[in-house]
Amino acid sequence: MKLVRGFSQIDESIAVILNVGDNVWKYGLYICPDIDTIFYGLSGLLDIDRGWGIKGDTFKFMDQIGKLGQENWFRIGDRDLATHVFRTELIRKGMTLTQVTEYIRLAYKLSAKLLPVSDDNIETRIITSHGEMNIQEFWVKHRAAPEVVAVKYKGAKNSRLAARILRLVRSSDRIIIAPANPISSIGPSLAVPGLRKELTKVREKVIAISPIVGKQAFSGPAAKYMKALKLDISPVGVAKYYSDIIGSFVISKMDFSYETKIKKLGLNVYLRDIAMNTLNEERRLASFVASVT
Image (cartoon, rainbow, N blue to C red):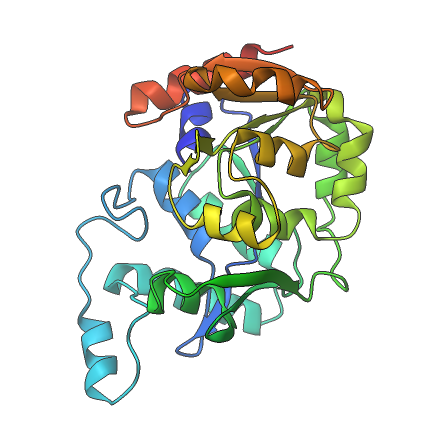
């Protein structure tokens, strides 16, 4: 979200390919956490402290669900609820996720193009020491505590790229892979047949930013996922995961010791301050990435 917000400050013509692997049916509603975070972040509604939902929201709906004897660990704010109810109603009327997302984008008057990678159902499943579970169960209900054995993207093999994705990849001047969790935030999109292959054709214009500094991820259980996939928990491990689809990799200037190893993968390497703790830092990193040729 942070880099997307940074780019939105310098270029209104950006397009964002949205992860659908976190999408889940809950309480009879179709919930799209990553998509909604982009909506709220670009419209100034995001609760920045939590990193999700609408700032100042209340949770009376969730309290009532609990009083009815239902699990309420997956928290939906009362204002946030409107988005899910509206999306679910439109999907049940026959609209695709792409169409619904465009409808909501226009309602928020956002200039960025927002495109779900696929209109098909893809579910990120985490295989753990406590059994297999949906990513929301792992991350929210179990607080990412169980050991991760493997990660899979249920439904991805039979999914299709949304109609505009290939055209977007082929026509864009540059493609940026944000410093999001490579396995759970970027991986589901790369698992959709055709996207990874298409990116290899244009890898010279694909730039990724490392989500890891040293051995520490900026946020989330990226290290657990990478360990399960036998990837080194470092910028080198991320670079290897992306090496067939990117031409350039931006890493923390503190990780200069990894530069030579990453260059041996055939990548251009740029060392910068990649932390984004303020809007100014988001804009500064986005401006640098936009200048990479």
